[in-house]
Length: 362
Image (cartoon, rainbow, N blue to C red; front, side, top):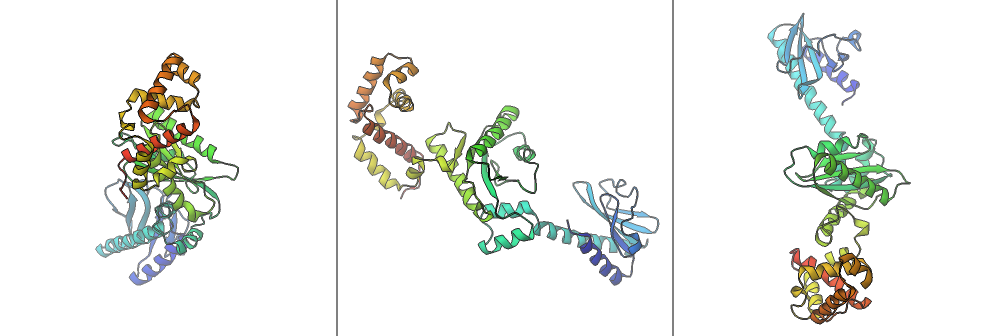
């Protein structure tokens, strides 16, 4: 909100130009600006409560009152002395002028809007520190960027639910960038690490899914130390979600710092990926593996290539699993019981997933 000093200077100038006494009353019925200095900080009982949400102009005594309201809630009330028609016109003009001043001030000093523009990379690098100082934003503190992606068509306002989880509005910022995507910029202490941020993401998911039945996934960028790194962290959170969607769509929380080899494969040219598959497998051999076989391979990898553990987990006899592994060896030419072959096959499966996601060909 603009300061009282700004309103007072404007009212004095407008009063002198119009040759009328006038003033500004805030939402607590206190006179915050007046051409009559004796009226400053006095109260006007009942004037705010009398607003009915429809009529912006009232005439009481020798004053015309003009309300400035948002969503039927009074923010300010302008008064001008005089009951003639010109007094009403003056009150409306003063209200319009102060509304423009207020919107300009709010826009210029809106921390949430500044952070959103910063995250979306809409601010020139040279302007970041200047504007941050104007808004008294801490520039060198740790922050984490979380990108929450929810399923479309929810009956509740997910944005409102998430916003309520972060009451520190001067330090933590929540904003929507699309119908399904919500960004959280969270200020964190020096003793907070990535695991703590992942726990926070887990809490958000528990609330959205457990209390509001909204399915979602969350991508987390690198924890940054300066405010000008937020755009980079946001891009990392986006990449984390995209990579997670391709390579591990069962995971609901994906962090950029833990993408591992998936990040490398995601950034490879598709031509190299296709060459790799042709080099590793006999023609069409990987496509001939059915879902049951692929599931067996996945469990075998999860159990660190341990035949006994995998057979117990699949509830099959050890010899049955050995038979399946021999079948895979016959089809692909790779023996998954050998570490080197297992690594080649694991990477190949990830490359296949990447190509199946229809990436841009290059």
